[in-house]
Every structure is written in structure tokens, then in C-alpha cells.
Length: 319
Image 1 (tube, rainbow, N blue to C red):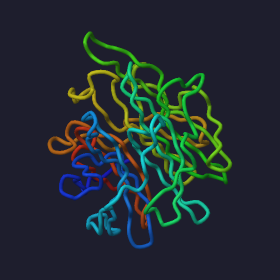
Image 2: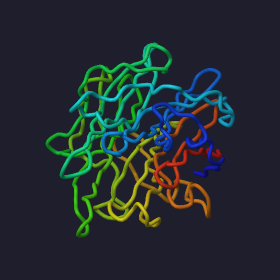
Image 3: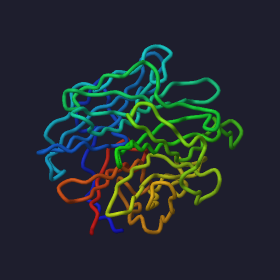
Image 4: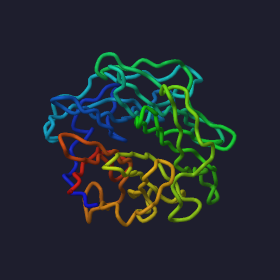
């Protein structure tokens, strides 16, 4: 595969965002309409109570050339959870798909903890106004930690194949303190679940779908799957689980795997066709890929340096 980078297409610092958010446009995910493309992303505001971040979902609409911006949402599209709920402190990311004249949304809710920084679970919401707003099914998650997936279930990506909902997601395997006087860091892998209705899910509890490349402490996140012919292609991001925030060679890169049956996956990062640039906004990190088709072309949205603090870019697959 070979991707042609088209550069950064959205910088949150150049626009007025809802909830006084100033930076971050993380995990861009596309919803294609007949005459434009809506891209959802997670942005952040400072919690006035303690100065920590709260993550909100907003969107930007592009013309179908994916260059010209039509509008940026003035309000967040979904509310954060109530006191004590799984998404009280943020939603990041949101994955959307059309089903039976509605738009389904799978959210990753964040809540702060004491011994470690955060826990996550997967929520569900629907939209009846073309994705301008979403209403939650309830206050709790539809997929969360379990016996063999004890931490950090999130990052859902859902597609429907042969009338079956398939979800790829990340699940945490450990929290570990790697050095004295540093907070614990998390490790997570990619899992798989299926559903008939998109709400009740059966997951392969604890099965790691994609093999490690770096070591057993490798973290993998944000799977994105497309089908081309009879083959399924997954793109995701991976990194070391420690010292990844400032050490570029330990930070996120894009990984790739393929499958012919949605069950067994072969990892082949040498064929991903996309790497960091020599300089600029994506020279230190590539993360949070989202692959989609639009007008007979295949695109990848992704974040660069500092986990998308200054926006996201796009690459086009050269066939």
C-alpha cells in the first residue's frame, strides 16, 4: 500500500470550538453525506474545578474535496455523563455508522480514578437529526471490563458484514509503574466482539487479535477496518507503554494487518505505506487512524504530534 499525504486539514486553534475548547482535535472519524463529509473529533476544555481536561465531541463539515471547510459545530454533539458515571470526564473517541435510517454512535467514556489516572468503557447513542446531536441509550456502558479484560475497554470501531455487527476495540492488560516517582502507565491490545442488533455484544473475552511487534508491553489502539475485494484491512496505532510522550522513537506509529475471514489476522506493518514526516506537524508521531471510502477514493484521517493537540491531517490511498 502507498498513501499520499495531503497535509493537515484542520487545526482547532484556528477555530471557535464549543465549550471554550482551545486545543486538540483527536481521533477524527468521518460520516459521508451526498454532498459533504462530516468529521467528528474529540476536543478538550479545562475543568474549572481542578484544571484537568474534559473531552468533548464536536465536528467539522468539509466539501467532498476534503479541503474546504463548510462549518464547525457550535455545540458539542453529546453530553458528558452524570456524577460518578463512566463518561463523566470525557468522551474520546466517537465512532459512527448508518443503520436503518438512524446514525449509531459508539463512544469511549472516560472517568478519573485515584490509584491510576483513568478508566474507560464503551457507550451507545443514536441520532435522528443526521448526526447533529446524539441521545444515549442509558447512563451506563454497553461494553466494559470483564474477567479477562480487566481494564480500559474502549476505542470501538463498528462495521456490519453479512448482517452481523463487528466491533474492534482496545482492552487493557495491565497498569505498571516503570520508574520511581512516575505515575503508572497502561498497556492495551485489540479485541473483537459481535452483535445481532448493535447493542448486545458477545466479545472474545481476553483474546488478543493482533500479535505484538515491539514486545509484550506494546500498546495498540484505535482499530479501523475496511473491506477491499475479499480481504479485510485493519489500520491501528501502536507504541511502547512507557516513555512514549516525549521520546519520538517510542511514540505512536500506524500499524497494519489483514484478514480473509474476520477471525485470523496477519500483521504486516512493512506494508502500511505511511510513516512520520521529516519535519512538521506529523514528524514525531502518527496516531488515531480512521480509514473510509468517499467517491471511489480511500482516505485515512490521522493525528500527528502531541496526540492531535494541533489538529488532524489526511492521506489518500494510491491504487
